[in-house]
Image (cartoon, helix red, strand yellow):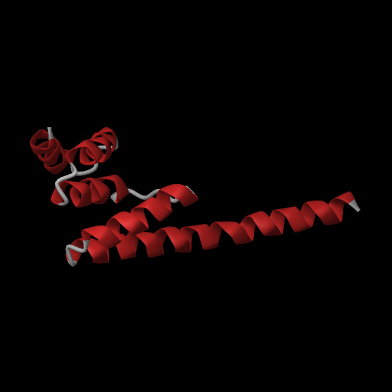
Length: 102
């Protein structure tokens, strides 16, 4: 009985990872598309969903920071730029945005 439960658990965990990865790639793609279209509201909406779901990818903080910056919400932008800078995502660009947000 325990072996069967262990097997079911292992397969459940293994099946969850590809879905998580696919979801992360989808959210990354959607935020990038919103960024290219300069649809800051959509980018922020998707970004908040990512944060609430625990989805994290390399450019999320930078894109969120830029979206809030473009909406002139500098206080929120600073938070995301500081996170992106700590993660070393395009440090020169991030530092410049952070400078202007301050």
